[in-house]
Amino acid sequence: MPTRKLTVRLPEEDIDFARRFAARHGLTMTQLIDRYLKQLQCRHEGQLHPDIVRFSGIIPAEIDAQAEYGQALEEKHR
Image (cartoon, rainbow, N blue to C red):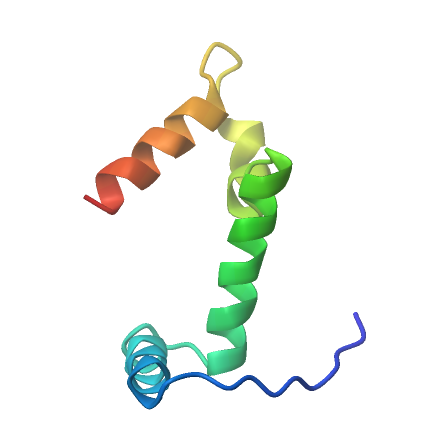
């Protein structure tokens, strides 16, 4: 996929936080922002996260994957 460069102006403390967060999770700033934007896109479009779709072949048909994923996110971010 082709990429383009983007300059974003944010408060210093937000940039410092993002850099620390990315470093703690073994990500680059580009990867961090890309993942966040993909999550926003999935939520906006009512889609499952790509990781969930990737594993959907091992989820039994009687399980509502989207509901389970939403519940897991709620528990994670409490």
